[in-house]
Structures are given as structure tokens and as C-alpha cells.
Image 1 (tube, rainbow, N blue to C red):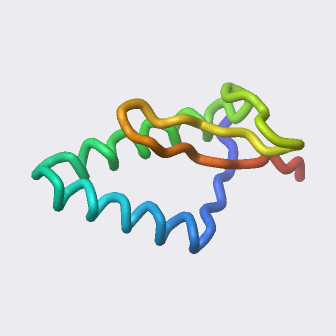
Image 2 (cartoon, rainbow, N blue to C red):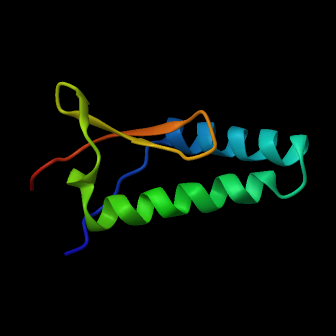
Length: 77
């Protein structure tokens, strides 16, 4: 089963800012950040329960190699 993922505008803006920051720091680093983001999102779509709950009903998927994490919640429909 694949879960639906809704990404907020603020999250998109933060992602874009981080991508361009890393790409400016080193050619190709932004693409590595993008690849890690895509990997985490793919995992979330397949199994959102994979990552632990951190605060109330919010969970965090932590990036490897970057000081970022995705905060999300699972909403039953």
C-alpha cells in the first residue's frame, strides 16, 4: 500500500533554499541532498510508521549526511 503525501508550501521553500545552498557550496552536493530527500519520501510513502514519534503525533525522518529532518504526521482518512 502506498500512502498519500502532502507537502506544505513552507516545506517546499525550505527544501529549495537548502538545495541551492548546498549546490552553491559544492557542485553536485545539492543533487545529493535531492537524492536523500527523494529516498526519505519514498520510504514515507511505503511505510510512514518506519520513523519514530518525536512529539505528540509528529514523527521525524532524519537525513543521512545533512542536518535536516522531515517532520510529518499520519492522518487516517
